[in-house]
Amino acid sequence: MMRFLPILPLFLGAANTVLAASSPDYNNLTVAIVRAEPANFPMPVLNKNWTEVKFDLNATVAKGVKLIEEAVSHGANLVVFPELWFPGYPTGMADNVTMAPWLANYVDNSLEINSTHWKTLVKTAVDYGTYIAPAFSHKENGNIYMGQALITPSGEVFVRHKLRPSGGERTIWSDGVVSDLQVIATPYGRWGILECWEHFHPAMTFNVQAQAETLHLASWPYTPDAADPQAEPFESLEINLAAARVYAVNANAPLVFASVGNARFLDAQGMDIAVVEAKTSTGQVPLLYHSFNTTGLAKTVPYTTEAIHPNLPCKIRTRILKSDKDASIEPTSYFFSQSTMSWVVMLASKKSKIASTKSPPA
Image (cartoon, helix red, strand yellow):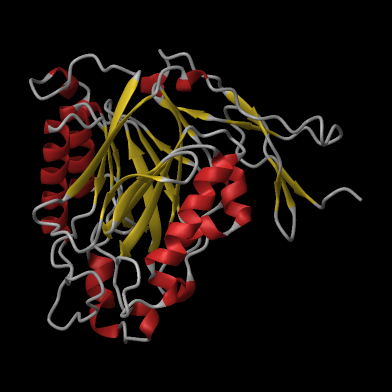
C-alpha cells in the first residue's frame, strides 16, 4: 500500500542549522541528475564482470551524501538517483549470469527504512533543505523490492515499489501495488515517479499521467550511448530513450532521465534539453543539472473523466506532503484505471486506499 512515513523527531530541529537553505523560490527549480556509479559498481557502463566485487551500502550511502552536498552547492533543489543506485544494480543478471555468489551479499546491503543508512539520507535532505529522490533495493518483512522514494526538506517521506519487476528482476525482487501509482503535490508542482520498463506499460503510465504531473522523475539503472555494439536491445539507449520521449509527450510534462552513464533532461515535447553521454567520465561529471521555471505549476488542476464515465465516478486523492500544505495545491483528481483484468476504483478519502475492485461495465 501507499507508504507515507512520519517526520522523524530527531530531525525536526535540523532545518534551522547553518546548512539549511534560505526560503526557497518555488517559481524556479534546479534538478541535479545523478549519473555517477554507486560504490564498487563495475565500469564502464556495460561491464558485467562482478568477479571479486562486493556490494557496499555503507560506501554507497556515503558517496550519495557527497553527491547531494555537491548538488546543493550548485543550487539544486531536487536530486534524482538512478534505479537501484543503493546499493547498485546487478548488471548482467538478464544474461543468465549466476546470482548465487552475490545474492546474500546483495540482500544484506539492501536498504531498510528507519535504518541508520536511511536516517542518514533523511537527515541530509533536512540539513541541506533539498528534495531527494533515491532509488534503492528496499528490504522489508523478509522481501526485497525495487524502491523509489521522495524525501522532502522537512524529512517527510513517500515510498513506492516498482509495480512489476522486469524480466530476470522477478527472480529477486517482489511486486509492488497499484496504489503506489500516485502523483505527489509539491510547492514546485506535481511530481510523478516511475522507473525503467514501467514506462513501457500503459497500465502503469496512464495512472500517473492521468493525475496531470508537471514533472516526471524517471530512473533507469544504467544506459550506454547510442549505437553501442555491446548493448542488448533491452538496455540500449535507443529503446529506453524512446519510451522516455513518448512518456514526456503523453504526460505533457518534462522528464528527468536519471541513469548511470547517459543522463538527460527532456522537455514536454520529448526533446533533449540537457544531455551528458556515457562516454563522459562520471568522475569528472557526476551530475547533470537543469533549471526551469515552475511558476503556477503547483496550481495545476488534475484531469476529470467523469463526463466519459458518468456512472463510474472514480476519484483518487493526490498525495499532499505535510511540509507542502502552505502552498496552493489542488488536492483531488479524478480518473479511472483499466487493466486487462479489472477496474480499480479509488475514492477521495484520507483513510481509503483502494476502495473497490470490480469488473468493467458492460
